[in-house]
Image 1: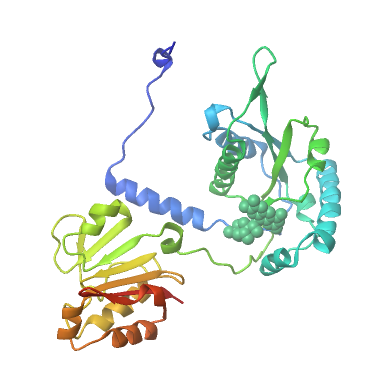
Image 2: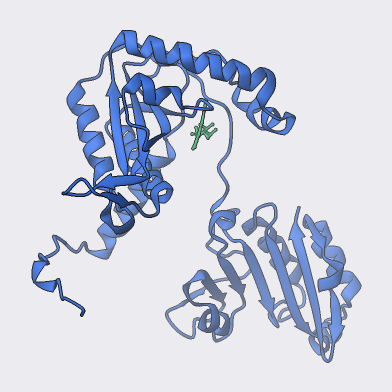
Amino acid sequence: MVVSMRDRFVPLTFKEKPFSQMKADSLAYYELMSRRRSVRDFSDRPVDRMVIENAIQTAGSAPSGANMQPWHFVAISDSTLKSDIRKAAEIEESAFYERRASDEWLKALAPLGTDSEKPFLEIAPWLIVIFLQKFSQGKDKTRLKNYYTSESVGIATGFLISALHNAGLVTLTHTPSPMKFLSKLCGRPSVERPYLLLVTGYPADEVTVPAIEKLPFGVVSRGIGDFGCGEAMLADKFGSSVRSFDAVAHDSRITPCNIAKVPVKADDLGVVVFCQSLMGIATAWPEYIKEASRCLPTGGILLIAESAKAIRENDRNLGSIRKVVEENGFELNDEGCYDEYKFTFIEARKL
Ligand SMILES: Cc1cc2nc3c(=O)[nH]c(=O)nc-3n(C[C@H](O)[C@H](O)[C@H](O)COP(=O)(O)O)c2cc1C
């Protein structure tokens, strides 16, 4: 029998924002979060417990598999305990850097300048150890299985990092490997697994961080740019991941523009498609390819399908298109470059 629980529902607290505010807020949040960096040199300036507790409450508001909330947060400011954690972490980290880590792993860590010394574990005012609970306890002390535990704890940890950053603090996500010692030092039961340790506080004076880059939007999200989209048939097929551009906008999904100058930030697309749109204006087509190159990050894909007739009329052949594509920083995929029926197909990857 299916019992309806709908009578135990409550109204959602939701206030719709005007689109202009939504746009501004989403951008402001992105700008706030893009300033977050992992910091490894902390000041010993104290931070009020209330701020840490608010951030942990934010983490506890995260979604979780079947709402089992399979997490526990231990916030530590006691200097003796922080010192014990540092000692135990450095033992594990020494073994890691000297023996356990593969050459490949050490190579990946090299740009971060990390080593087995972890003074921040003593200096930072707060360490928050996050534990993952494989099981919860039911009302009658029965053992309840938790679902999607690592996904849930990962999301809650993301909330926590975001909340601390929003409060004006910096963090370091630290995973001394293995972390079992944290269970004993924090007095947590064996059904819980230490998930990670979040170091938080103020940065040391004039702190520096590794000069690393985040993947451009085009790689993270793989948006498709349909350059010279006509009636936006790609958007019909693939939906909102397609951004449609053409000189004339047939409908509101299409951005009217010059294809040699599309309103897209550099590196913002994952794929650029010219489907019978490259050879419309004989003199401009190399500019279109140059523009596609600007919009694509390294690894981005360029796809061209052009009618042999248009190519003939423009006094071009497959060879000359290939040359221009290569001159604009692409590597051709030979298997994707061929003539078939009345069309020429070109596939290339941005180097
Ligand atoms: C799951 C996870 C584990 C990490 N473990 C460590 C660690 O043990 N030590 C460390 O110094 N940084 C650690 N980091 C931080 C990463 O090195 C850092 O997030 C990455 O280099 C990107 O830099 P950013 O956080 O400044 O953007 C970890 C990050 C994550 C997400």
